[in-house]
Length: 256
Image 1 (cartoon, helix red, strand yellow):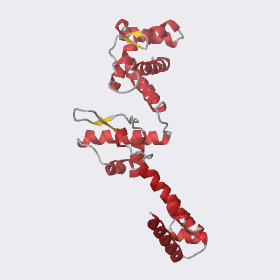
Image 2 (cartoon, one colour; image 1 turned 180 degrees about the vertical axis):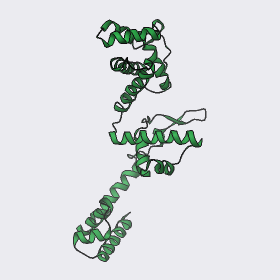
Image 3 (tube, one colour; image 1 turned 90 degrees about the vertical axis):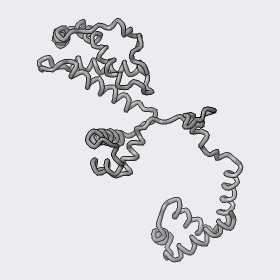
Image 4 (cartoon, helix red, strand yellow; image 1 turned 90 degrees about the horizontal axis):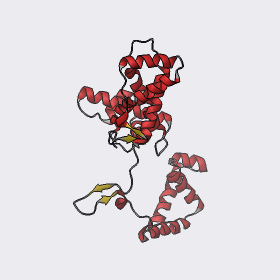
């Protein structure tokens, strides 16, 4: 992604004006009083500020024109909400506003929708990771992050995976100078002869089981129940469940 190109989102970046700090302050005061012309000049005079923020995302997969437009929305919010009575430079206030708008856009318009709580956890984990690296000068383990954030290890892994960009199955993963090896090449084809023959054989083997044996296998291996839970549900002892389960599995093995 290039943010130094001449035109972005229909705007010729080479013609962008740069306002002095005194000009900004004057226009901000006029804009706060409802002067729409001053507001328009402020927007145009700070577009280079948006471009400077977008440099952070150089090299990513996002469309630069889309991000630029979103950044301008953040700039406009900064202009409309800036308090001219504070002793703060406008850029100091505007940059976090622009960044926040871009981050919200990237979070809410991902190709795969992720729950808000999962995204929030992922961002907290990434912040903790950055602080750890800055302090320790090394990557933290998942267990170390779990200890810092007081979150479960499995939840941390799931959260980080949820905000990872999806990868095309045609993404090259290895090449030795010839044709590249893609992810798609490593995916098993479930339509080959061996797979459907195995499935057919399994179905035939299951037909040979008695209804109670089928029910026990269903509860044990599809519902994830323990033998004690199965025994309680169908009204027999755990020892009987164990025996029937073993007999059913042996029947299937003999068929396969």
